Image (cartoon, rainbow, N blue to C red; front, side, top):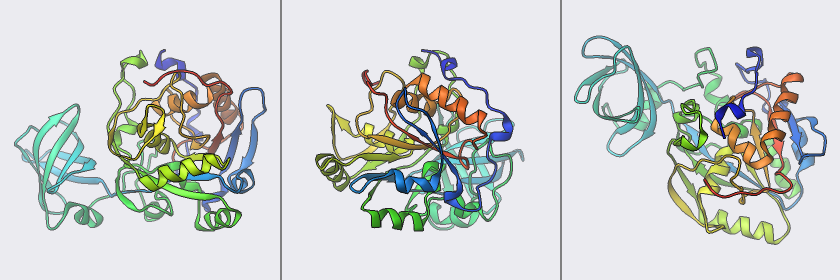
Length: 349
């Protein structure tokens, strides 16, 4: 299977550059299994589409101000995009510069302090920051919010709120779990009153989520690593939900990645650690019964994941429908409610 099998044409004007005034004002494309028609709805309709006893699983990661700027010892300008915070004021990061800095060199940071280049591996740098206080706290006043590369503007004050979910709790992501951006506190309260359950995983979305696939044969692709935590209470709640006849609905592909990474011999188990799981057609997703997600980039691993869930042909047809009907794409865009293929088959990748 080739990455070109997941190509679609997207007019640039459909790439959302800013959020709508209200989180729930986005549109919702409902994609039932093959044979049933697509449904064009509003996201607020999700309340009517869910049932008492259903379980929504969210990702409670919080986006950190991960962009910082500085200069090399030679004076050349540098942009640092932190991928992951490590112990001891160290971090894994990408560096944008006219010439790559070498291990052992130092970067003078615009906001004060320095970043020492310890090593480089697979396009990422291992840095040690010499700044005032803990790195996470320093970033909160010195760093800038890392909007995705397809949003062609600088982050402004509104993004500090709107590029976070209302339930964001655990700092560590450099990109938002965007399916959750459509939920506001009022909608969550109405769902709770209806008897819809909610629970959380943590998966810190990395900058690798935006990196293009560089091989044509998708079997040759190596996924970026992301840290996750699937807790014992969530595992028990999922089991009880299914035993009671309820549905488990993932809010975002990051939730699917987390839950599938926690599967052991077909059984969901508590798990905390890193994952490199790559889900594409041929992989059978067992952990969830439905998926709420935004629209993803052409030829991306996320489009491959949703194709594994709902079928490649079905997804490409849905994307063509979305383009034809002017849906807004990507992080600040509209959403989809996906149901699985009628007969999903395959093995883990």
